[in-house]
Length: 161
Image 1 (cartoon, rainbow, N blue to C red):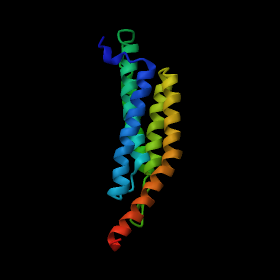
Image 2: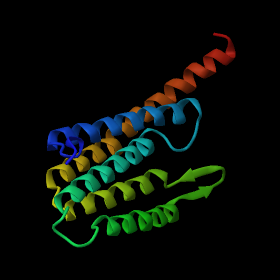
Image 3: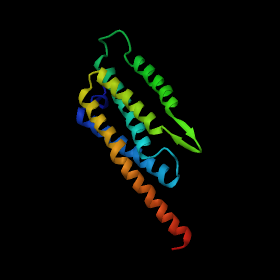
Image 4: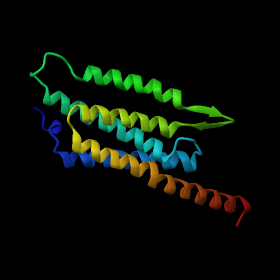
């Protein structure tokens, strides 16, 4: 088996954290500079969710290789598709604003958590839950501070100060 698919738990923790941070960096640019509704939390959760699904598929593929006569990731693929429809239903457009994007991203990560727990990846699931809560709560404050800072500096620049 390829060594890249045999990550120890702490390496997987690092991968989740890195994906979360990189997604949040992209989200900062989208929220602050581009003034898009999807910001740090949304992009961070989507990046971490994608990473989590890949880690889960790598783990499960290796754990069940040759033992079972079916592909356990087919069910996971169905879950991912279904959660996409559920997330789309949560997103609402109202008066030129978008609501529910972060909730949809949270539902997506919750689906990834559920799959990982189902496959016995308990420690990784707990760590991803902690990262998700940090993104929902702590990054909300950071994102709003960035927005206020940018508006203040942008207004000063436009006034010529």
